Length: 528
Image (cartoon, rainbow, N blue to C red; front, side, top):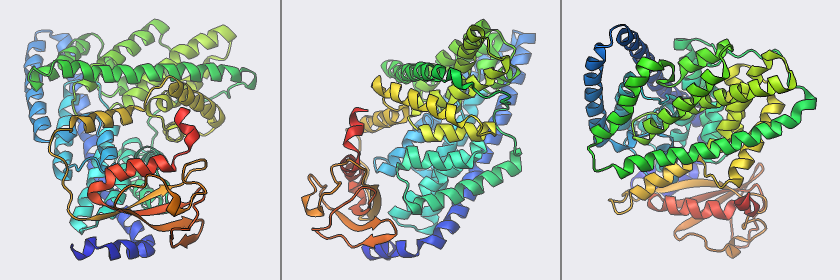
């Protein structure tokens, strides 16, 4: 075993991590920002070219034949990229989660190149895919590449992957707090101080660089002129419940889209990709606003003058098209498109409520913002990230209480409908698809993983010697209780909020992570 991977170094390095984590955060944040900025720039140019082509086709319909030929070329190139590096498929967020949990070992250089090229080609072809999920993967892979160049051990590599993911989302949305919260809440699922410092520095660094290129304006330009009346807060409960149900339907249909393309897997991949590309060609002529990530639909909604039938048409078409685009496995995400869909749901329902209760017309923007947060919470099951994201993207915290109510209700309703978080479901499919294939081979490395003992978990008030079903070849090496760090012994009793530092072989990380996470989880949350 090399010196850098020795158990001794793993155990002694955390004592001196504070300064190095800040430095690593700046380096990874810079690398992730540069990659994400390039991706954002390429997609912006691709979208401009797409809509220019649409104008030309509507003026001279015969040009659609040439565009169809170009789509065949794009589909062929995308299929070659997907065969060269399969991990560029989809948004990339499940792949990052799988990497952190030990299920996957993604090649960083190939993934960055493949995602940049594949994502750009898909937007030129008009696919309804976003840049934000891919930016998370690009940032994470930039972090992994930095780790490999610096010769970091497996534990630090995972820290830098988390940092890069936070930085990637921060650069994509101009939202550093959202990048930080998403990386911790959804990907790492752990709020330990070491990861927090590194990811926070990385997100702020990436946000600063991104704003230097694209400016400081927020993604959505909705002005809230009216507070939601307290006497109508009961409407928020119903609003959140509807969003929770719609979020569960969204998750189900997205997975069915993948199932559809799996059933026609006998067709060459470039032919399967042509299905959404041909759909995009028709939409380019008849309804171009539904193409690409959805920024054109946001611009329409910001005017606030469109009738409900038009909004409903755009919503339905955008949703169906997104199902086919994402189900095809093309490189691109659902992050921004789902926010766009949520905003249209909010606008449609909001117009109905405003008419029924004679509320001010300006309150339509309240419903749009609330719907984006609630829809995101129901689909991704990360309500804190959703609330912070919408607050940052709209540039205001005035609607925080109503955001909390809608997001929590949507979160609960989606849980009650047994709808799994979308990225968890997608990761399960990736992992199950690898069964029977060659398994990941890790070198003889050790990894330090952190777990928080939750209140009401199996481990609470248990002595270490009494822990049931503890994974094999997995050792608790440290317990952090507040500001104190305890040396674990068999008779040490665990308490809620204890942070366990566990030493495990890299090859056993996936299984150990699953077992220990279940042991640490609040037993009451399983039925919630």
